[in-house]
Length: 178
Image 1: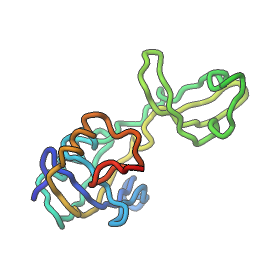
Image 2: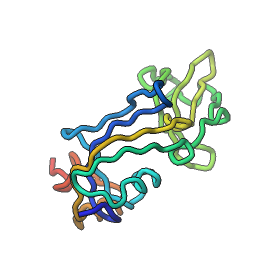
Image 3: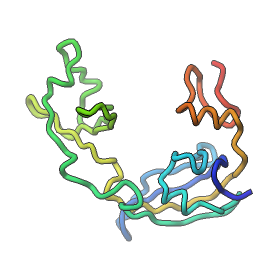
Image 4: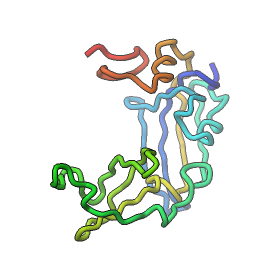
């Protein structure tokens, strides 16, 4: 079976970022912990799926995505200073939540949800970076397709509903019952 829309794809890969000898291993999936997704369901980058389309079980792949094909260029204007006071809950800052390097769910003035990384905390100001962590990076993928199969009706329903709730985990067998 080949990779095409609405098929469940399971694969392993090594993701390196950077150029030439400056490449760094950023992420790795393994046979024990593979990536599994429904192809064509907007779960993955379009360019990532384009490179995998038509591959079958056992096929290997090696491709590069430019920043434009992935998460865009790094934009300095997406690094902003915010008043520390907006992070208070009941008048207090939770230092287990607000610390340099942590990524926090935020909302802009239009109600859009976005993730921001805490860059610095200085005095009454928190510097946040709203760029994707891989913005500006050239991404190199090397991997193997472990399996391709039809998606079950339960998996499609789960995907259409935005995921599962009240379950211990989702996988090929559906939601756990715990």
